[in-house]
Length: 84
Image (cartoon, rainbow, N blue to C red; front, top):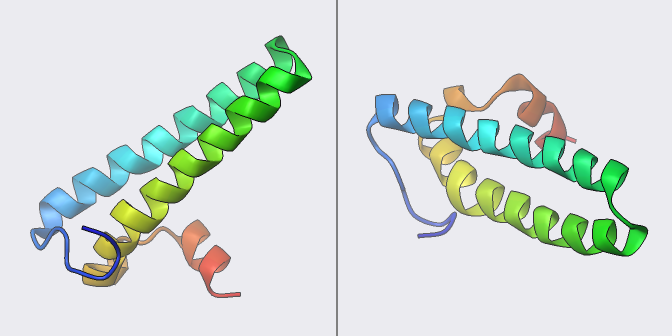
């Protein structure tokens, strides 16, 4: 699909997907913190790289197309990050 095309035209479904993807991102952040606390530095570095790729894919391939179609669904914290 990718950021180039429209992904989800139905606003209600787009909002639900956005909420769920943002929840996934928060859980991934929590998990990354857990790995940092409980695992070796090598394990953390490896996990952090994979987690970063996952977060990037969720943002670029899922959320960006949704926000292009429905700009009002973009949370303020993401607006601030991408407006700089």
